[in-house]
Image (tube, rainbow, N blue to C red; front, top):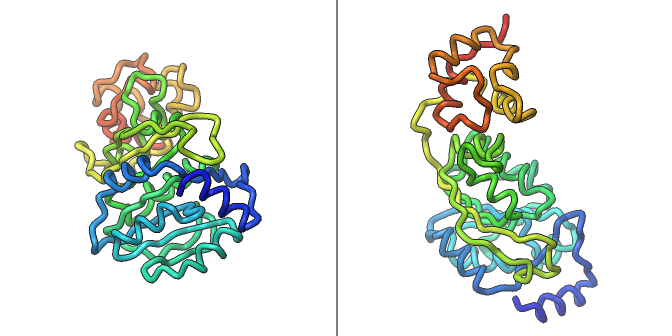
Length: 267
């Protein structure tokens, strides 16, 4: 949809975009094309979309996929989308962070995620028992840079590691505010996340998420001190080859996994 078409439809629906719900509607056909190219939807695939809004991306996904599951929280937009009667689109009225979804692997997630819930929505799918094999999402550029960050950089943190332990992340394209209506106050970015197995196996029960959270809660402190709640910190650091003075941002993903595999909580 063009800007004129979006404005006309919003007027027809007597709807003003909600800042609380992070509603910024895509009006740039080139960005839509890039999203679809990166998603590479096959005719036999199921795709989940969170925050379909006015259905611009939904319509394009429905033309490519066998099945689209679209989760919309706004009751006004949900009613509008339901009236479109796409035969292969299943609409779910609810919050993308927690609404029940009847999908099974393999599937993909393709969404222009509302800024207000982008991180918890991503965490939902990354931590799910059955994970999507690819995610192509438009998020705030700041979030995209955190997802794709490398160790030793300012953007590298807990979100980076929790995501990259399961996914290879690529920042595919920066999107300017003018590609949406209303214009957000910051740039966005299209992120491509492909499912992978880490080079170092994460052992069952290893406290990976817990130690990563501790390691970046106070990122300027030495990691060894932040992990004092674990019994064998010194031995674990020595086994993995980590300096006693290292900080969390200095460790790569493999080292974080190795450390989690070695650590045991105090009994």
